[in-house]
Amino acid sequence: MNKKSDLAIENHKNGQSCSSAVLCAFIDDAGMTVDEAWNAAMRYAGGKMDICGAVLAAELVLKRKFGEEIASKKIAELEKRFMEMNSSLMCRELKGIGTGKVLRTCRGCVTDAAVILEDLLK
Image 1 (tube, one colour):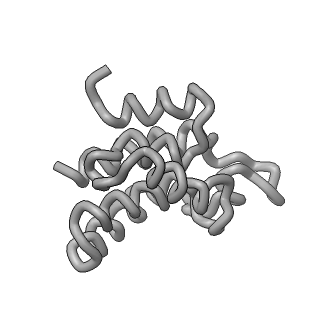
Image 2 (cartoon, rainbow, N blue to C red):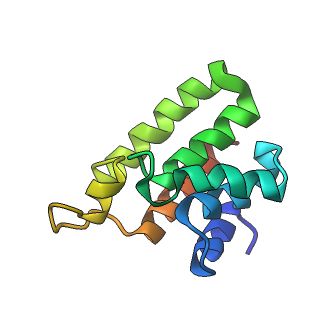
């Protein structure tokens, strides 16, 4: 395993939430300690902020790495690409809550957010 996106997927397989799986895989890019990453990720997990936690974690990495101004363009690109892949950014919609139609599994969201993030960090 040599890519951070692979590490994010492994983190999720090992029981981490969607947000912590992504954030902990990119911890060095975010300039955070493990404790800071875990605490930050708790705010985003499980659709607590409506938007997919994996996406929100990826956005936090971009903000911390590049600062608000530069990150805003990268965040727009992240959201655009994620939407193209999954038709939504909303956790409830992705999980099919209320519709019964799952657009993407949590593991799939972790994968997509991490792969896009990895590309945007290049």
